[in-house]
Length: 179
Figure 1 (cartoon, rainbow, N blue to C red):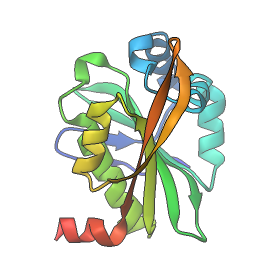
Figure 2: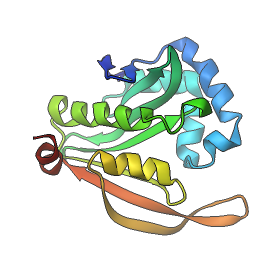
Figure 3: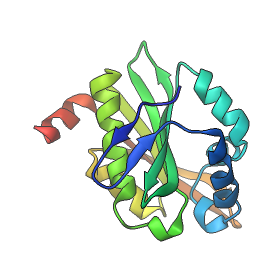
Figure 4: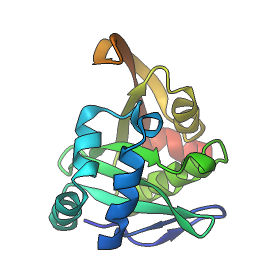
């Protein structure tokens, strides 16, 4: 499903629209943007029209576009939600390189995490990022995610193996940080 409009100080999370596909085509043509994305994420987002339809109909995914500086700059979501176990897997991508290192991903993650715990009543959020993607990991840690492990040599790209950092945040820990 598409998430509701969530406004922060720097970014707004909004439901996706059909005309957002053009952003993904441009972003995914740039290997610097996609180098840290898992293959599953890249393929799903690149097939944007089908992805938008599937997400719009999904009961186990919540997805937003990220707007800042008057334009779409990326996307974020909560995926594979297990309503029985009250957990889901998160992901964020900033596709506009001129918007990197400005705190937009951190704020998008903050809005998404608050929504997951306060509105969806989830208990835990999980994620994983390439170990080399230090900026993403730090943004996650600023939102309460903690290291729970590393998947060694998980992905093969650019002629070498890459480790994946695994992180989680529990609602109880997040609530303590918010108090």
